[in-house]
Length: 383
Image 1 (cartoon, rainbow, N blue to C red):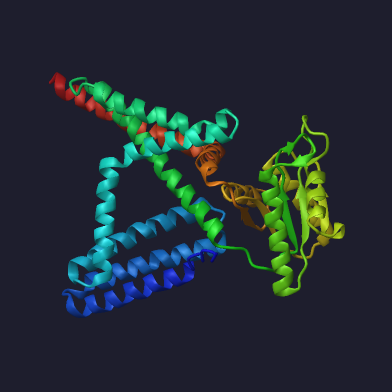
Image 2: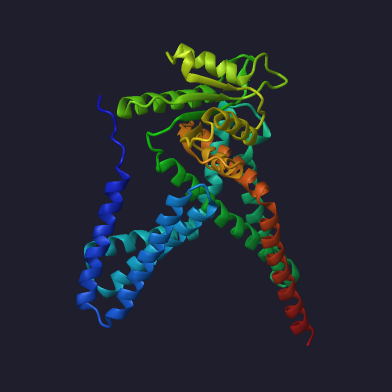
């Protein structure tokens, strides 16, 4: 049975770029005034160049996801402009797809999302324990139904309630767009793979099974680290050290790092290629304490490192790495698809709490604007 070949992202990007460039050239020749097309294309090119520079400098920032999203929106708008100026196939197909997708999303998007949340919750609750962290999609589905019911019961004659509801929706829209920013940032982190030049691979720990054996989730992390370790050696001849990072929890018989080492040894990794960090209890400490070990071993010589965690977790781990001053890339191990929505929502909540001050400020801004609208509207009614 033939394995399904993954889509080559570079080839796809080059094809789309050349198609846009060709259609832009045709449009410049045929369309008057040309300045509109030239200016729009220059702005679009500048946006993508800025995205590239930000990602290349440090993809561990939310700014990378934000600028990339802006560039995507501008690309869609530019394709619409090309469609208006000439009838070439590529922009016409793109425009039809975009318009139909947009209409379907506006009409059915909310309902489809609620159905998806309940469907995913059903699968998760069948396969995983019924903890709060595994019930997030269920809670969001219930919240979505409550919003629809609230909208139907709010009487437009009660303007204060209508404004309060609109204010709540505006806050939800704000968090929706911040979620998209983090989602794009996380996708970028997973798609752009680390170079095979690493001196150290830091594998982040997780809870143990029966207090002494790695769970399937943790085994996946170690496997991803070992796979990179072997690929790098085959491609470059450079052998990386595996840093098993994880302390001992109150319900664990041995430190997570010891269990991870035992698992790696069973997979054929030499003990001399394994380092242990057995004091950490959080992701931040994993990276902070591992950095201390690497710094002490390097004696001031610059080294290359990468950390290994689940694909949904590596962006936030990258943020922590930047906070502790560790110049490290991320390697993501695959997670069961049914588990991704809950896991990523948890990551998003954790990121919101990390930057809670800016989100509180944004919400307060929305609330103040809503209050001003209410005051102005009430004064108008009284007069």
